[in-house]
Length: 175
Length: 292
Image 1 (cartoon, each protein chain N blue to C red):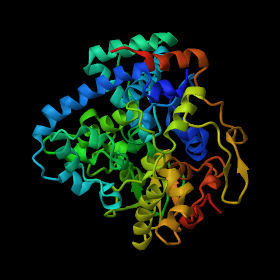
Image 2: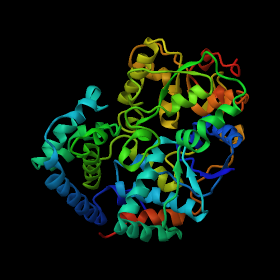
Image 3: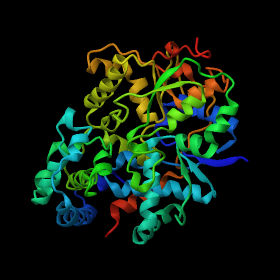
Image 4: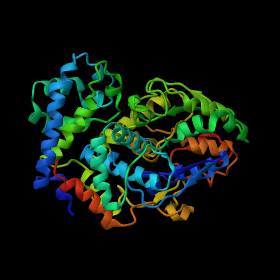
């Protein structure tokens, strides 16, 4: 099992792409119609001031069918998933969910995954967690790890092969 | 009557945010909560939501199925994990086709999701399950003179549609708990601002700027300190505070402490057992009796 199956253009991913495409089409055809561009989502957006994400514009572009452009835009990766847009939308459009679908589509289309996502995914595949036990520092500069503090053993998948087989099904599953 | 929960640790708390886990394990049993260590849990899946939402759903369902196997309700101290598991349960209950599909994949590990479990976070466990009155009765050292602000964390509050531990726009449970401990909760305009952590994976500078901006606002208002209830928020506000300060060109010195650590101090537990030396922010400024 390699990370490629989950993130690149391998055969199974074409199925995933089809599924994502259907989801985005549905968002485009049905959901984005409800949006009347009040921009309440953007007014509360945590990523707006800092990174110029404008959720209402994402919805507008989706409505116009500019799917490819959106999938390839870096700005979709600035969402902080604070969920305020979903909570506050008077029309229940949930731009955050549109952004998740767009990012998933970007990944399934073989566009490089930004930042540490690949490393986190790799760590999940090997130990089941996004990272292993870290050494931390105290205020007085002593270094400590989990067992120094008398904490019980880490809970993680006991049978790595079986765990990976489960995840493999996501990569290989035909829709 | 004892309440029994599987402790779902997630990734961040058990691999680096040890102070949260220490203070949880010290305080909750004193309030009649039995925490069960369960083998085999994995990541909740939420950090992978931008990459593959089906993977998120699968990992959450897997963890729910493990708890189900042990016939246990679940205590989830991380706001992000709590959202993932709650949302997964919501989806599987509403969408039988998805439930069947996920169960097909779970078969690889001989697991099945069949029924809803009670999923609680630190805030609703303390406020709704244990209750403020009971907490009050257990307080040995009231936190007199501690004026502190609360940070809930976005994932803890929204989307309210699927059921979250407190109100999405005006949460008050932490404040009520703080009052029960004898402290004085402080309101501030930036209360609902994000900690920035979800951007750590791909835009770490921006993530830290978000952190820095909120801490700077708190410091400028002369607020004594910040209390939080999520290992991701705490990683940003406490563990990375010095770095966050660099992004806003300010020397930040805001004491940041887990709610369960403050609870522990009020219950009379020693600072060592509560991991208070692990907080990198200047918690000694809070002048808690336990912290010298």
